[in-house]
Length: 120
Ligand code: 5GP
Image (tube, rainbow, N blue to C red; front, side, top):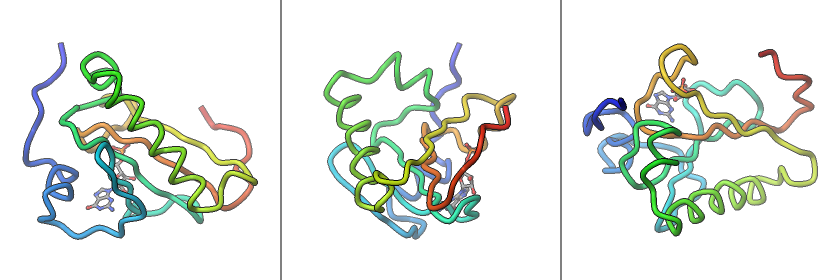
């Protein structure tokens, strides 16, 4: 089964304003901010405001409005950052073997250069 949500995880702390972040978007459903260790010219993280440990947790537990609101925010962020014309990549690491470090569901948005093929 899924692990319980850890209120002390770093993204929970960012949501509570205990840790600063470079915000690019915030609404009722989602918060988006620049990754602290960018792996592309644009590397932004989008997180739901609800407490979900992973993509599996989010898709299983979130309501339809919440889910739509989250994915809409992902699209809005890409548009706001000027990525729509050039293309971008969205990615989520799901669980330990995928290298998920932070146990609050998040989507990475990569862009700002031609990305080439995925490596895995
Ligand atoms: P994961 O491996 O869990 O998919 O990705 C976690 C991401 O969060 C990594 O890309 C990492 O650089 C980023 N990250 C970790 N701690 C912080 C932080 O305190 N602030 C920000 N903005 N990003 C963070």
